[in-house]
Length: 277
Image (cartoon, rainbow, N blue to C red; front, side, top):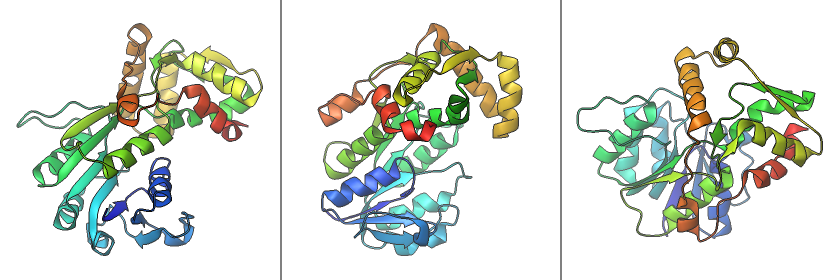
């Protein structure tokens, strides 16, 4: 197995990708912006680079066979995929649950634009499409510590996935055959309402945490102020409203690929209990 470059190597998923590849004895190089603060496992090769500046990627891509690509919320830089294609043969891209674009169709989210660039690059590719991360509930941490979570749509049912399952799928795809041109939609093993998630977090930390529904318009104002993106907030509110009557779908992709069920939200909450205390 030739060298694998992992971008987003210090992130919630990338860190697990790096450690799993290293534990398997594979050659892994971690792309980070600040090597001095990376704190990655001993023996992992660390390379400095930044996806917002494609020219910085060239040294990190030397002698690389495969790339795990995670794109942060940055403007799309076409030079990144071009650089990868000059050096590597395969890319596994951490995308999101988006439909494939038809010819001439305009992307509605940056993941679709990056997928389109990868499709045209000549690289062998696999897209990982998690619907949503369990780690996003860490945004409730301050409220959990106060004992009450105020958020819209308490009966919206979500199928959140553990970040370690995303990483495990990424490692499986990077180290085995049969995944070219596949788009894998990844979820947890069950769909739980927002209110149920909060209850489970409370049980994990050993204290009662109550749910209070926040009116959608109040949530719109608060989240727009916090996130700074009114369009994104509107899309989130619309999606959550839809999940009240139509729960987010659950896939068996993790089990099919790994031969075991996806980790439950309760297991995630227990692992992250200290983050809420």
